Amino acid sequence: MSKHDRWSKLLELLAGEGRIEVDDAAAALDVSPATIRRDLDELAEQQMLVRTRGGAIAHGVSYELPLRYKSARHASEKQRIATAVAGMIADGDVVGLNGGTTTTEVARALALRAGSREGRGRREPAEASAPAFTVVTNALNIAGELAVRPQVKIVVTGGVARPQTYELVGPLTVGVLNEVVLDVAVLGVDGVDPELGLMTHQEDEAAVSRLFAERARRVIVVTDSSKMGRRAFARICGLDRVDVLATDSGLPAETAARLTDAGIKVHAV
Image 1 (cartoon, rainbow, N blue to C red):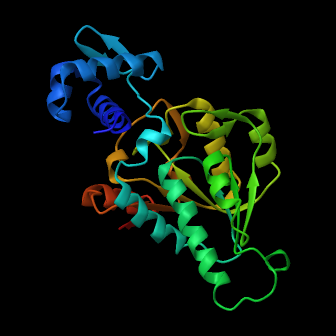
Image 2 (image 1 turned 90 degrees about the vertical axis):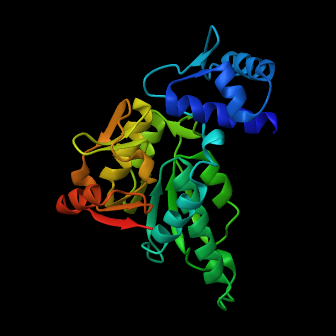
């Protein structure tokens, strides 16, 4: 197992349990305790956990994994969700995407749609043709992937980059979003609470996601079912702002019924 894979697994264990012990982690990863100790020391140096005697704990109650370590979690579910959401977006729509692994998959699904559109016999130069979609995003990784797609118009907000999520935040981000109108906002979240609504780990990201929702005619939330009923530090908005929730088939029937009663269209794929 590579160091990257070990680190990813250690951070996943930490996110799920809140703390890990060296001996337990060594058994789970089938490596020596000495290897785990070195890994935990290096992760602590990067301020991704707090070392304790015999193990490590998360920085706080609500723990945020950096995006590069979250990409492999629930990957197949996220890809199915993204494909379903791409089918809900019409050609020519202006789409807002915040950062996250599931919204990144949505961006890729939209790029595939745009590419197939170009391949269906459109012979005019890409510069002269109308874009398949216009994507407004504060996520640098999404912008980087879509910038090379000639059939997608990409608009990137300004702002200060957060290295954990590659998202731009702050007054510059807000300034750009205040000047645009979106057909649909696709929001990734860290938690969906039936009382408090959509939640994320960071207050500055919550403010940007809230503005995405306010500027959109329609709001689609994309999240795997593991985040349902989970709270995080910062509230984005209430469930009354959500039109569609796209998730996986692990969503409990009782939760789906409650969301439907609240006027939210649920797509569990």
